[in-house]
Length: 190
Ligand code: CUA
Image (cartoon, rainbow, N blue to C red; front, side, top):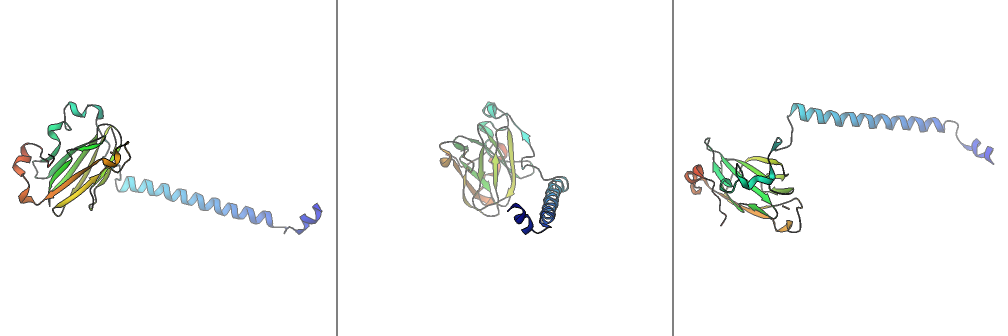
């Protein structure tokens, strides 16, 4: 019986299997080389890095002073006329919880977490980022039109994650208190 079965097998079956294996091994090696090439190209040629460019901060002492102390939170107008919006993300709120931003003005959002990983997105815009404790998340954009947007937290951060969100109120430049915002941070949080 054993002899019969051997005789039924085509003589080149083992060779065909090896050829297929070599072919797949080459295809896999080529795809790995291509993927490594893509990583090297995007990081070296495009300067693609994490959006925050790895700016670190001590998340445990945000409230003790410095850039993210309470008086600095909200929107300030920089000497070059652009807006800087500083926000602290913490379980389970953004501070301030209503951001007042002028339309048509370059905006830099700087967000730091006081505890765990959070995320934020401004609905109907391209703003969408993670906030990792120990790092400052920086997002640059310009909001072209006035309007109200929701800014929910989109990283699960604990039992009340779904209740963590802020408003973003974009007003046209005439309605924005530029003079106040040059002296201190402003917001629409009540
Ligand atoms: Cu903060 Cu989810």
